[in-house]
Length: 144
Ligand code: CMP
Image 1 (cartoon, helix red, strand yellow):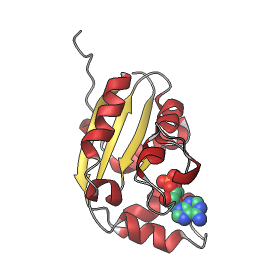
Image 2 (cartoon, helix red, strand yellow):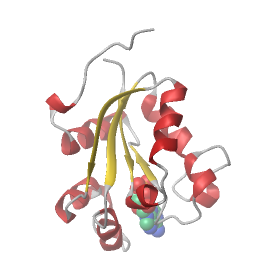
Image 3 (cartoon, helix red, strand yellow):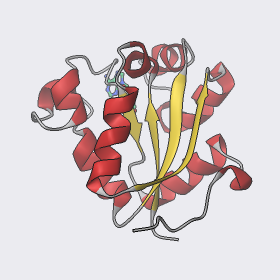
Image 4 (cartoon, protein in one colour):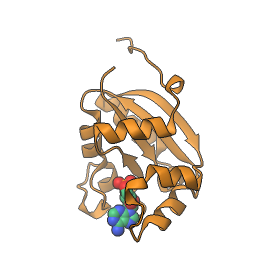
């Protein structure tokens, strides 16, 4: 396998109809979708996902928000997908994200910033294990 990243469209992105646009961006860049599911995360899952922010003032709101509706959890594979995926997503604050990035094109609010992407290869491994079973990830070579 090449590098994997955990990419999740948050409840605001789903509600606003951005699923197809976001998937298209990763596909057109040349990344490979190897896992995808729609679910409403429990508060427990949301808290585990955001464990590194536990104790911060915005943590309860963050957990409530993530479990407030359906998310699209995905695993994308490809060269430097963690780092370049973050470039495609933009900065945490959408107002600090340039046009052309997902958050730069579609958001203005840090708390509703549409999408999550793993910040390191180690985070990606932890997050993928949290959201997916090994057998839910497809291993294939796209035909050309
Ligand atoms: P994300 O990159 O998914 O990881 C942590 C999330 O916390 C971040 O996106 C924001 O949506 C959310 N958040 C809410 N408030 C803040 C804040 N004040 N600083 C940083 N992140 C915040």
